Length: 177
Image (tube, rainbow, N blue to C red; front, side, top):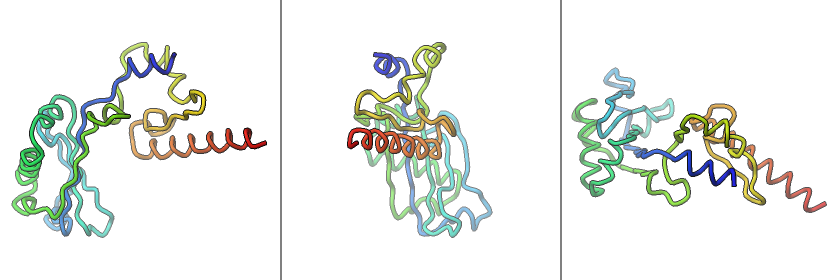
């Protein structure tokens, strides 16, 4: 019951995470870091998501909140054009020719129902926070919000996955014994 109340009171946000792939990280050659922020725009945040080699060049675009909901109302081709237009505006004409474009609209995901870093209004964690990691029978919970370290980040998501896997293996060994 507490887990159900937690889900009702801690919704995931409207978030698009988009990877725009280029042959190389051209922005680095242009002396740019790839990080930019324009709150409320169709590309709220950009992050250089490449390895140290810069090949391929991957620009991560994160759009959240009302900007993500507006972006979600566009068809796929319009979204792509708008996002790439934002990259061109920030990083120049080379941004106009990606080799690949991948988007994830977290708001329409069946099981997560929203993007990373759920919003917890006052009182939710004090009342129901214990249910973030407590298994519900055979269901074990993992995800960035359930991480005790680096909550909201990929490192936290990985840590929570490792924790949940260890719980499952421990529970399985008890059943097998």
